Length: 171
Length: 240
Image (cartoon, rainbow over all chains, first blue to last red):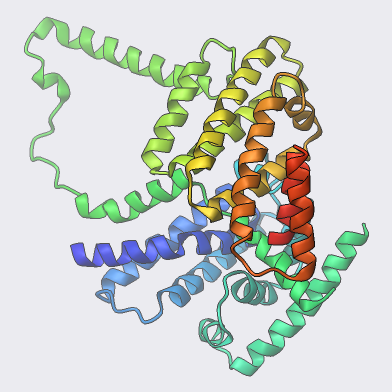
């Protein structure tokens, strides 16, 4: 058990910031991002123990859990609000938490807003490829889609983001 | 906008990081399950270990009262500003959190300086004139600490992070005015100078385009003219 714990600790250290960042960009609230991310790693640890530490690609595995956790979060919210799951900015947390205080640069804010206005599939791919440096093959593995499809989505996502950024900057 | 430019903009989002304390606490919570112990068969009570019958209840009440007072004081102290009576409790909490999270010295020092700057900004914006002199002293002390650490560090990534955050802080009108004031100009200049020196040293190790080389030379001229904040802005435009 100690060995498993040490192995998972290494995985935790490697992916905690990445998973947190991924979740935060989708939920736009430090508190909610922390809550969801800790659930992701809790589930990850349980699965890791069940499989006796034999998980092929820990990153892909954690991202899948994170993606589903965010979807579940918005399904819960949808029960109470009548806002579309894709419409993240309307559900944005406008509190003055430390994370928001760190993001005071207007350019960074513009990029964040533009990414959050994308469809969720495009959001994920853009974040994974451009922000976390993941290769197309790895992303295709997470989404269980062909690499060609991922490349097309990447291109479309980037073009949509370009358009959003130009609109944000015009304002 | 070119694809490369957009990719560079997206990379800005890598500044989003989780809170260090939360990372450590969450890890302990998840992996700390291995430390679970089975509860003893008997329902034990701390009062069982106090031999004198008559004092048990008094001790319990006194202890609980003290615990509530301490928790209350520390909780309330989080909202205090420099110059307030309970500010020292807040400082103790911050230092404990930094020690617990195992943050490295420079990063922790800069976070403290940022908090002191936020305190100063709050004191000015909410017109708490009684707190401003203490807030300024605290800012001065914390920035001087950071400046010393910058001169002794080899962590170029952390230096760059700090330089970018200092640039952003300089864009806040209230803080920019205060940092340029008589009480803080020398301290803030020393910080900018230390950052400039480290950044120039790092950039000179890299291969630069002709344009970047030109910007570096301009930055060095500004440095010799003691325009440290403008020199830093130039250097940051190269490393983006």
